[in-house]
Length: 514
Image (tube, rainbow, N blue to C red; front, side):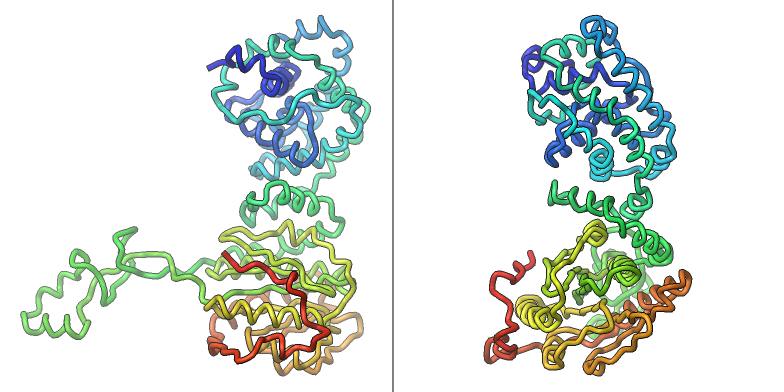
């Protein structure tokens, strides 16, 4: 259904939609226009209010296969140019920019990756974000266009009328800013880090629950100079990691197919040969639970363990150590997820930062790539806070916490604090040595296992990948057989066992898990 006269008078609709007459890209499916509306609204939430036709055209060049796109003029554009002759050279420049981006390697590779909407928004923010401060005119309408497929169906005949319903200084200012910064925009488009986009696509769609905050993490990942090294290292590890398959279990519910034979089930899944027994033997087998039933495939039980990846983000971890630590965290987190475990991630330097709870199939890789810690180094305070929070976690969650500590070899923690952490969680360590350094920590005997990575290993590409793969496989293999921790009973508050100077404030406690 075309746009109604009432909507045509609404500037929130006629403003963005009318600007499509200036568009140089058309999609075969109207649903691509609906996706463009989402990109437009999400960019506005990031503070980047651009004309809708710009978002539509550039987004389609990175999101839709080339065979589904048509580059050319819209109907009614000649009438617009006759009324606004100053727009002619601007549109010529605009068409040339679209053509160069459409033929660029970055655009071709991005279309093959089938990026989701969140990643498209980040790509557009990266490429077009510099235009906003160069525009001399603000938008006369808001960016709250409804996502209605029927609204944009067969819209072309009405574009000229919708364009003339409002002054179009905003659209012309955007074209002028693009013409003045043409080389800058093309450089940003060519320099797009597609390896990061590929990694984020391999790890599953990022959570959109945080809205604009999720996009901020993605932008930080694309803008971080060190992120590309971490991404390349992660891409070396992930092919073998992604071969992991979650183990199946069997149950009695009538879903999926038969998966095996067990001693529980319904009458319709009874193994027919059981009926060959005489009545007395059949009764005995039933009483002693020896009757055989076909069992059906079902998902395994919830994870019995909670894996806590604790990553050092202090200044001592910069350079190759940071690349190794964060790449290892991504690989280990994904391996544990594929094994059916729940994973939490947390950075620390002189304090513990907020917990990032990895959802099923979704790892907060953008957060891992873009995080910066600049608060010094205080291991005693960190472990004091960790011990308190683990004690509170054990009090409200029956799962066993397994802490994987990824840090520098000079993490000197008072032995009593490590003992306090061990009371509430299994503790494994991965220590990265500096050049010519040695591992000399007095609490190593308290750890259930640890690995050491020396400087020579970090410096050699194949050795680094082999060491990380071995650590991941060993860590996942060990945690499958760790014994359950004994239930803790506290006769006094847990903070009493920690020095007063190191106790965390109440405001630093994380909220209970939902």
